[in-house]
Length: 508
Ligand code: BG6
Image 1 (cartoon, rainbow, N blue to C red):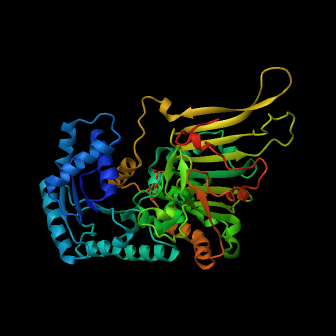
Image 2 (image 1 turned 180 degrees about the horizontal axis):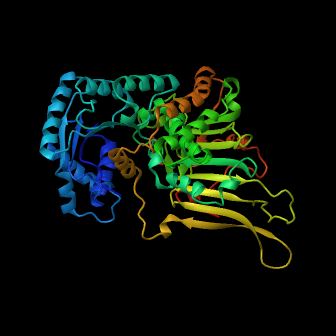
Image 3 (image 1 turned 135 degrees about the horizontal axis):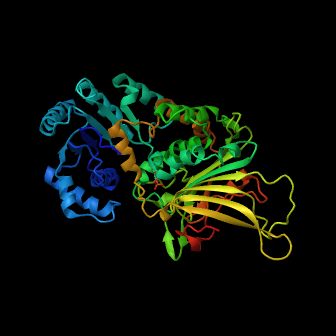
């Protein structure tokens, strides 16, 4: 990997959590790998008053607390923080942007960064418009002296209409190529590996279609609750927070056609085509395809767990969903008739993200199944934790007769001892520096994803009779989610079934 060209990175929201937990540790890791530009400085701004020195000290602490580097040398951390700067700023005040321009001009001269600037908007979405408009008004979106790139955190919009208005607003101020909309799941190594598994191997692709695949299941489960993000989460919910972005992007990469090249637009065009082929939900029948739930209080291994409505920042009468399970179809030649099942939730028994491809059974059952009757072929792409790939198939049990047992062929990334999996932010920040937008959501992808979910959002808002199921914290969500899959031996895959297994990703 090459060093990116020289640049300054400006972080709005530099006193916040994202900066300390993710951005600075990721930049530090890039510096350890010598993947930061030769001439590079970070200018942070936020509401909190801090000096350069106090900002540097805070960031050094965050490197020690959150960096994924195995060993951190204090000398290296000191070298890194030397190029961090901070000034508080009122983002609503146009004059502050003229001051910002002066500061950036002088940093540019001092560092020789050739006018190249990346602006990271690590602020709540309500801040996007005012920051983008003021930066543009101060001439800071103008690319005549160097590139100007803008990174926007999710959620991008609140629904289809607001996402379209935000795109329109940004397009009036800058070009689409300048905008990098973050979906950190796309930065995960295992999500990118979906492309490699599918398109670098000859054995999967011939089977990857409606003729051989029975159904596809995508799960992103979390064992944590909303922690201290209650007030944000209560206005978002699982559909906006996880489904619209992370889960649909994983669906896109699982279902897309092979791109003609690795060009960012070639890949994103194929993902977009998947989104455009989603069979629209019928607003009057949403409850048949989408189940929502909210966690209630429970006791896990002796510890009392607060119900969602009693979390800090959450309304006691909240109707916000912390769990969503849905079934939908992709109407195209590859996938017509194959159901996709997608679910996500907080306070489930374990943290796991996985994509399960369930292959069709053999047309004729020659052999008796083992007593559980569970078998057949599944390809499981484990996104996290214990990243890897698992292929399940039936095998003869040793001994007389032809008894069949389901076994697994299992690959774990951790077995590649020479490989370190970079954090998602490390990869994404590096890509913005090099101007590679492959792993960022394009305007039309985001709008199409929101449009697909629009009937669900409308049905939930307009039809209060649609149930919001309670589920005790530490369980796999509402029972009714099983009805989506259809019963019999067809159930969701439960990577760990019992609460006693909580936090243990146990296979087999
Ligand atoms: C974020 C959501 O985008 O993804 C969070 O806002 C969620 O609510 C997080 O916890 C999950 O990310 P990861 O990488 O831990 O799976």
